[in-house]
Length: 272
Image (spheres, rainbow, N blue to C red):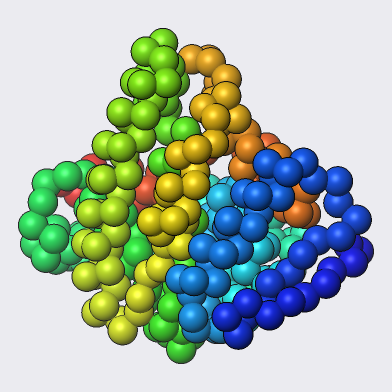
């Protein structure tokens, strides 16, 4: 058990890990994440959109250790990757965890209604809005009005395959991709919150805050991606996750986007 010392920060406890050998760069990242959470998430009782992957598990672990009352929220079709993997990882964490299985019978009408509301044919936007519709529905059923996500890590720490494709163009090309990804993500999450509001739920992305984005852009590209063959990426995030006690199976898991891990992408294409 890692000894902890708790301090107050804007009325929320901030946990400092003792007994961990942490280089300055990881300690800075750790503190920047905690600050982003504290400044963004004012409700002490929260849900966390949870797939079991390194990003959502890291934010869950940090929020839990900061003293938030967290509930993990996982959605997907029956036997989907995210449901199975989230349960597997949480066997080690043992956090409160609820799962909502998407019903095939009602999915077409729900996805069609969402498409009409957000008024775009962007497939990724539709898929994410559908996913967070179900996350918000689950949160509402549990009396949770605030859901925190780890969105921003993939954009800022080269989590997408697009960064591998951009690697040969050097840092300038990678930064160009990053700006485009961030712009898209920020706009998409506005659409997500419009859908979530149907359930009186707010989706928060502390790692898309202005200050955290500004900090993350100063992190060397080499700490994020090593070359065009790098299938894992996000190395600084994975290293930090290991140091703060995220289960190894999560730290070493390759990225699987929410719409794929939940089987929403596959099902949506079938219904079109």
